Every structure is written in structure tokens, then in C-alpha cells.
Length: 445
Image 1 (cartoon, one colour):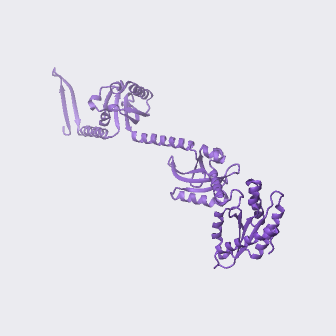
Image 2 (tube, rainbow, N blue to C red; image 1 turned 135 degrees about the horizontal axis):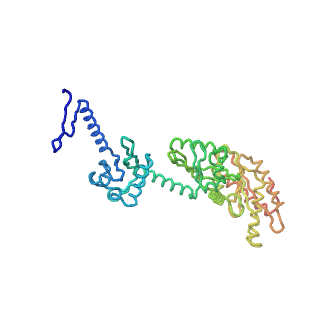
Image 3 (cartoon, rainbow, N blue to C red; image 1 turned 90 degrees about the horizontal axis):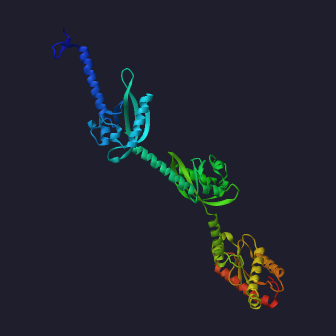
């Protein structure tokens, strides 16, 4: 019959055993099935994912090339073996337990595990195991696959290690470390930061530096400028900010900022170093470099800078008083240098108490003093001289007579050199010194 082909099978005894009749449709179906199986086999073979199947006895039935390559074996050498033939005993036991659980539960199992491949190399793998079922739904084995996630897992481990190292460095750093977001809200702080400002993490985290008034109102604009630069991708510093601690004490802070990423979130690492002691030391050094240690007045080096600074049209008339303490040598010789020092100190105190805030009083030499009076006429300068002489009389004691000879000069024109004015005041002082010794009375102008 057309469209059909009959096949007769005869056994050895000559009897008809089976007649197979194939229709054209059956041939097509069989061909399609063979092609489908071939495509499936090709797909499995070319997949980078490792694929294998085991029977109910947990003996390998098949695997793809990627699986065999991992073990450094041929596919046919794997089929018919168990995990105990391929892996270390402890690892094989773990695989067996997972396979039995899958077949018993009938559920798919997802596993993150370490797999040993050829040469004893261990890789990180994501494994999926599923029960194999026949047409009736009976479980007859396990189908498994895994893919190598070593690079990803190592990257995660490296990231975690890096974060751990950062956390250790963050917490143990001697400087105060703050993590803030782009708006200036605190995200974290280290131990040193808590000691610096006195705010615990619960008090700080989630709050804004402006709300906590950590930066004075005068410097908020500078802090905002730093945040703006951070937002533009710039690190900053060092900048100096006066920080307000929880107890309202003021701290001179040297501030640096760095851009960091924590769990893919961009943050700003603020490093604050307490430089209060350094600033006080610098101020002390500056004070000592420009002040006379004995009297507390400015020294000659500072006065010379101020003379140069104030020698301008705006400061005219610029008056100068030159003074010389009388009787210093006699007191040193009679009572000792300690009493002579007291005379200089008392004289300095009188001069300081008699002058204005804008006036500059300095110890010019051993027993010499210089007073610089910006925008002061000669008439006003003479009045000051008389006041000083009067205060000296009141400061006198039997043991230490406070007496100072004073000379005056005024620069009223820009063309006149300041050195000549100082010389004129000095000459005037020496002239009056002769009169003071002779009369031992206040000067009369």
C-alpha cells in the first residue's frame, strides 16, 4: 500500500515475530525526534555550564564536555563512575547527601559550594540539582549543573576584605574620621571623632553638621564650599575650621576630605586633626618672637615692622615718643639686677596703662622704650608725656623710684624720612634726660 512500508521480523525458528508498519507521518516524527535530540545534545555539549546526570544508584550516566574538561578526563571515562571515584571522600560524601535529598524531596536544590577540579584546584561554583523523572513522574536519578563563579566570588571576598581593612583603619585611626553624604549628613564616625567632639554615634548619625552647630556660623560658607568641591569630584584640604564640641569648647581643626565608595554608595571621608595645641604653641612662639620676655611689651623687631607698616599718608601725623628709664644702672649696682628688672617692669606697666589700644609700645633697647602714635598731633603727644610722668610719680616706691626721660618728634609730611623722626625723638629724650637729672621734676613743654 502506498505511503506505508511493512517490516517483518522472523526469528531463528522461522516464525514471524513482529510486523512493523511505518507510515510517512511516523517517519517524519522519528526524524524530527532524532534531530531534536541531536540539537539538544549539541546544545548541552557547547554550553560552558557543566552538566551531568546520575541514575538512582548515583552512578554517572552522562556529562557534557565542560564537566569532563574540569576533571581533566574524557566523558566516557566518567560515565559509570561515582563521586567517590572522582573527588576526595569528604567532598564526595557531601555530593551524595545532596543528591539523596533531591531525589527524596523531589525538589530542585540550589547550592553555593567549592568544587575540586583537575590538579586539585578548587573553584567556587553555583550548583543546581533537580530530580530526573520518567513519563509517569517517577524519580529515577539526578540532573545537575554548575557554573564557575570563582572570579565573582573572589572579587566579593576582596571587596569584603577591603571593607574590613577600611573599617579597622577607620576605627583605629588616631585622627578623627567622619563619613558624610553629599549634603553634610553624618553616616559614621570613629572612636577618635567621638573623643574629639563628644558626640556618640547615636547622637551624630543622620544629623547634619549645620543642625548640630559643629561649625561656627562664620565658617558655614567655607564648609559648604568644601562640600561643593566634593560634589564636583574633588578632594580638599588642608583647611582650617574652628569646631564646636558638644561641651561648647572650641577646637582648631585641620580638615581634609577624600571621596570614597562604601557598598557602591559615594560618600565623603572627612579627616579632622586637632591642632589646638599646635596653634597655641605657634601663637606662643609668635608672641615670644615679637614680645620682650621681661616686660611683656613688643620688642624692637616687631616695632620696626610696625614702623614700616604705619609709615603711610593715612597715619599722619605720626608721633613718636622715645623713653629712657632713669637710675637703672644705680639700682642694678645697689640692689641687684632683680630689682632693676622690677624697675623696667613697672615702667612698662605705666607706659601700657597710659596709651591707647591702637598705640604701639615697645622695649627698644636695654633701658629704652619707644611709643608709636598713629594719627596723633604733637599737642596730644605732649599731653600723653605729662600723663606718663605723673603716673611714674604715683608708681614710685622708696626702694624703686620710677622715673623716665621722654623725647617727642612728629612726622607730618610724607617726604620726611621716619628714621629722621626717630632720631629727633631720641635727641629730644637725651636733652630732657639732662634736665631730669638736674631738676628731678616732670618735664614742662
